[in-house]
Image 1: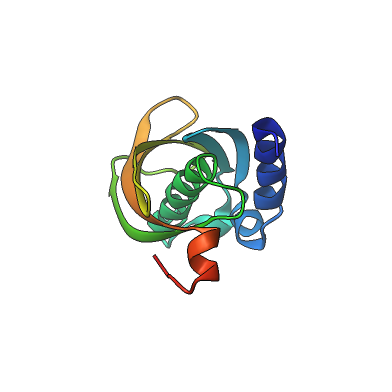
Image 2 (image 1 turned 90 degrees about the vertical axis):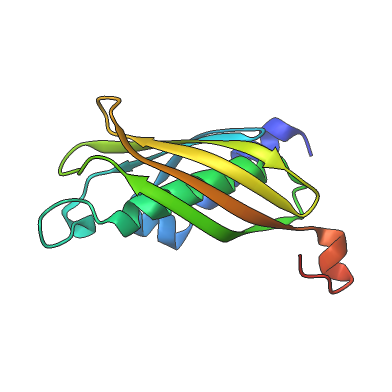
Length: 146
């Protein structure tokens, strides 16, 4: 399948994912090894102090790395998080969050992605690094998990 068509199908599939919809995430760009996802501030995503909960921001960052990696693997492969670390720098109580992810290393069975989450003014809100397992279609057919 042509890469551009695959990226568009991936974007459509992911944007219709119930969890992404629950958080209001919207994939705006997919390229080979890169992605951009937006998530608007919503009251439903806040903790008791009225700021966006770190778990929602972490979900945005994790999704951005996954989508960036999907752009690098065979369309039949599956990717899954195996490790994730995030630092938070600024609270969010309005506006829109934008995650920009880039795969910084891709091996045969694992990959590492780096992601920055910015507010709508371009201020760094969070920075994360995630390690993913790449489950190849051929490996799954043979019962190999990772």
